[in-house]
Image 1 (cartoon, helix red, strand yellow):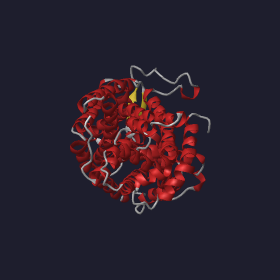
Image 2 (cartoon, helix red, strand yellow; image 1 turned 45 degrees about the horizontal axis):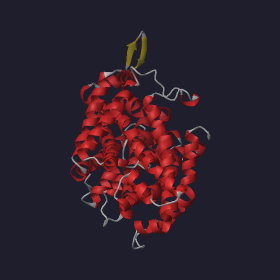
Image 3 (cartoon, helix red, strand yellow; image 1 turned 135 degrees about the horizontal axis):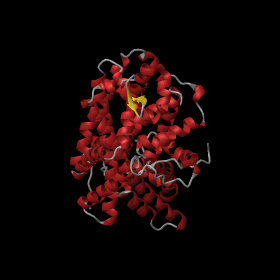
Image 4 (cartoon, one colour; image 1 turned 30 degrees about the horizontal axis):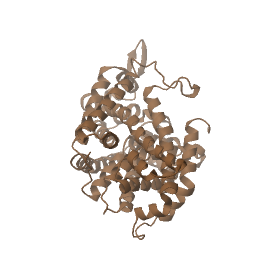
Length: 472
């Protein structure tokens, strides 16, 4: 398969930032911040971004640029000729490739949900989602907003329709190639996404009790700080920075040799973290204004689809803001999903010696098959619980199972092997010269070396052990 490249530095930065800025920033980051103490979670997350996250971001991009290959090919080439132990690190390439293969179908399912809600905000009266709106179901009154979401995902054909619409967008963009498709798409969408974030933040400043919401968001509540605050922040980094899923290795392989890798990574880091903080500013004050601190703390994973429609329905001009908000979420979901699919396409093309067109077709088939099964996990296959043989996970549906396997098991293991690849297989001195050949542009080199040797693997082991229930 012909090697493609980004045409410019800004093309890489916006594409990589588009990958990093996804549902993890818009949906997951705000509710974790509310749950784990507002400002204390923000400080913990920022510290980890600047150390743990930054180190893996540099490592993956440099591995991609060094080899010009996807995860499997990159690990294989760098481990060639090593002894049995170091040679076995090449398994990390497979783990980094398996993660996006698992993630992209169910990500498209959620992308279909976002697409549905964007359409609903355009066509359905916003009053239908008001906090006081109820529906009569089997003789009992139920919250209208929650019922709307539950009724949608448990139906059969409507989720499939919106899933197919979202997946078709991905295929169209990826099919146009790296420069004409992915780069151009992100150059348009990412600036619009930031502008919409800022616009909604300004709107939130004028809501009733907005000041209380902003104080709740920024004030560091140390009483909620604990071991799980750090674990949650580390887990969020995988979502936010698109690390340990092969994406940054793939995008790094598209980076031009003359580009400043350190500067590129710094800009992606700033862009992604800035959008995450903006997402919290546009969501948490609005939720607190709507229902107080309790509403923010209890929103949880249902924040976007159940809570936010009620928030918008409660304020003046809410319909317009709701349309903009779900368009923003749709943009974020699309840019991340495109990077996941592109990683799969590059891996399939390089490893199976396929043309780009055939690799895209194969990737699309995988999305459709696994995506349909995931959708049916809420209706016809609702009694299927793949991990039912493990007591702790016996209630997980198909989507939650795929998410757990990818994000809680495969990605931490892949990141551990990436760290070993850099420190033991390549060697830190050689690796640092690849990152900055002149030795003058990399101001955080000592932080990178310290983190890769001391910090990253213990942190990843904590995440992994917590995920499988050994640490609680």
